[in-house]
Length: 113
Image (cartoon, rainbow, N blue to C red; front, side, top):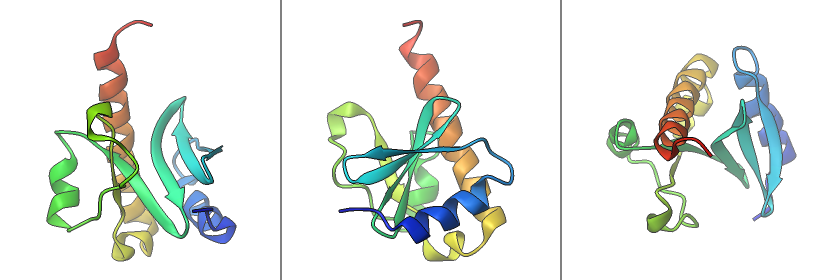
């Protein structure tokens, strides 16, 4: 599903206040990248953020839907951000920082390339 340009612009405006951010086209959606690390995906008018063993509980407690296109064996878990978080820029930045931390942990675990 293509992404909504207006929705992406809104997410970027909220996050760019504190984070360096690049939006890259990905399979009809947009990938959100911070310092070379993919931490979010925009599909339609939904934002999915990266989670790992340390951060997944937050998404599960909030009853967030997982991104269905990520096969479990990849170790990439993305969850849809709740509406109340999307409507509060400070909360969205907090959730995004958590997703960036998950991406950084995964990158460190891969070791030198």
